[in-house]
Amino acid sequence: MKAEIGTDIDKAAQLLKEGQVVAIPTETVYGLAANCFDIRAVSTVFEVKRRPNFDPLIVHIASAAIMDELARAIPSAARELAATFWPGPLTLVLPKREIVPYDVTAGLDTVALRMPNHPMTLSLLSKLQFPLAAPSANPFGYISPTTAWHVMQQLGYMIPYILDGGPAEIGIESTIIGFDVDAPVILRYGIITQSDIEKVVGKVKSRVHTSANPQAPGMLDSHYAPKTRLCLIQANEEIPDGYVAYLGFQQRHPTIDRNHQILLSQTGNIYEAARNLYAALRQLDEGGFECIYVSLITDASGEAQAINDRITRAAQTLPTN
Image (tube, rainbow, N blue to C red; front, side, top):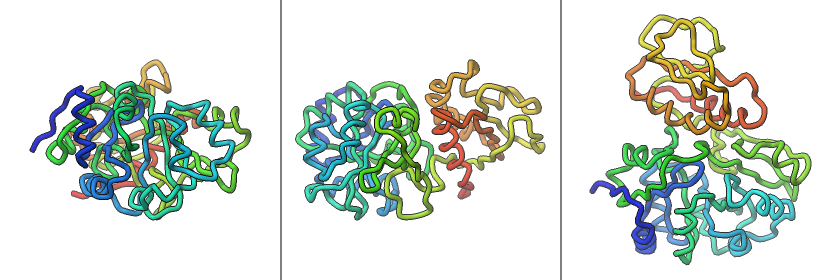
């Protein structure tokens, strides 16, 4: 079986109602979706991705009103954040109701909820009587997909349908907020920054790394990685001779063949850089290089912090072959 790529929302909805999994577009990355309440379908998501069962899934909902059906004891700060940023790239980790299976939450008593900001997926959700559990549509730990073709390359022979919503507008995963008692805590950096959040709810803390048993998706130290070894360097640091590539933000590396370099944004636009990050990593990963060298963005505040976070996690992983 090879996946069909198409724009038929009704077909995607029917497959999901039948207990199958479907790749869906969002403004962040493409997700691998299943009926949140169908344990067998959720299990298929884990199997297709080869995702460990200790890593929870994000549940995608059609409206903020559904938050109360899936979560309880919702802090006022969570409601304020949802009112401000939904639909959009913000995930809230909240105490779950019994209706949400532990298979979705990796045994945790919390559920990660998000209302995506993509017209096709919002239309799809409106046709369903259930929310969608949907992690990124790629093998676990590998670079997240930002186009339908990226999904096809990795999972095309394991799923029936890929709903094509065009290239992801944002290109990196959502910001995740959890709560210590009622105090917001950043669990994963995203394009919605700490400053953005603090304008709504006041001062927040961050706790974004763990080596095991994460509270939310995307917290593992090693993630988002190409198969080619990824090495962090300073922007003008000398690079050893060899068949190597370079991924930079705005400036090229002076000693590497220009044809082996990709810049995330020649104009220094952070949003363009985020949108291009995963596609650039994929392109270089297909080049047969011995190593991909990459420099962090020197302005590590705001949106750049999320890009640096993804690069740093990707550099933790060494190739398996």
